[in-house]
Image (cartoon, rainbow, N blue to C red):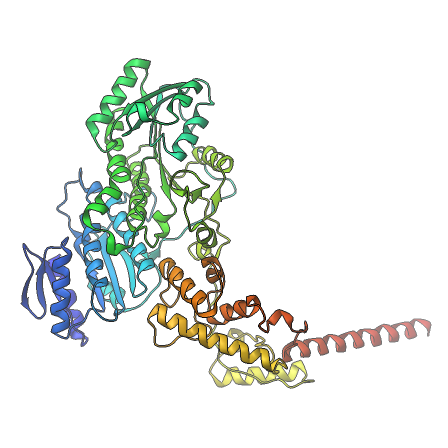
Length: 619
């Protein structure tokens, strides 16, 4: 790894760039301007490194994090090793704490063979956790662009040039993998019309349910107990005397409760063995619902909070994975979240934990073991969503609130599908979700010429003028397309136009303050400028204060450009001229008028042809 770092540094320096190599050490040390040592998980060391780099006039524009390439980890403990994620967290917290204005930074986290690109690939749950953390950091910090770059495993090629390209060129994709010279970007895909079906789980034995006394867990337990013969072992940390809802579940069927920490292998094993002896049955099914939501910004996410937020989901899942290795388990289902795929501002630890579950499912599948990770949006007023204040924003993003009956139907359907990872409640018609769904490649178009069109111009003349303009730019006849740009006619609504311009100017001023930008255009998108869920809440407050309105975050989400928001404000402000108040009038562009004229000409020719035909018939 050190040799790769030096080769990469030499390549970047040969192109006139500055490159600093940072190694692991027992304390921070500056060896020279281009070589430093840090303790990778210590935020203070990264903060000192950044301070020294600024003093040396070597500010950070991009970071290539190569620790994911380490191959010295114990294969038995590697899937639960959170070191890389903790290193990224410490580095990003130091970057966020820099004084003054934040410089844009590209952070590329590099691994090898950690992503499941092809069937049978064995992903790394720990690396997946670090990748999801990057997505959340990108959501929270507008100046940061994070990418999880996965190199081919042990293919013997030198990745230096590839790494340099990914570090210096802005390209799309938060999760990127290279295999056989091809670049893959992780995307979602809709289920096929006839999805593959899984073998029905055995009805013998009993089911272990972790987190079964939570809001969602209670609903799942009640649902399972409606099937005759179900035996349910529920584990949790709550004393049995304080376990609300347990007595009602016991009335519905065969239920045992064991006070056991899911992260403690000895406690969980003892609970399973006691249940097996009591029922004279084997453990055949696992449902892992235990988890913790720590919703806070990264600046408040210290090491202790981070570990606490991950423990139940990640260490608990690994405990269950190890526990079931020697048992006849035919179903192993974990409850994850859409945040595991999308990330989320203020939910960095939660997103990372759920990404771990998603990757663990594929990891188990690669070993020939049953596994399925169900990534939910939100259950309405159940579990972690109870009393959640930003459900409207969640809906606007495309994460649908699921009523309990709908969620249970989805649960039943999902268990019949032979898919290791399913997102449930993510609406692919919503723009944010749709942007992550794989789709046919669309042709990219660029403007090469403009052609003015006066009233009454013949379409043939228009086409000839456009063809001449295209040829002048070197384009062949078959590769250009004529599109209408609308009318250039001026609106008579002078007063309304001036009001909208004033609103646009004021909105742009507010956005510049919120986003820390020198310039914001009227068609710039809030999220393209670095906006995120946290900044959207700040922007709502600033807009309401500036205009005396009461807009919600959903209003801002639905009107993401200065122009759109100004029109929305104009339409909603009492006593102000509004676009809706103007007489409804459809302006017709020149191309549209030419098309209408051509249609009239064709209709006239058709009438003449019909009339001549009648005359010939009579003759």
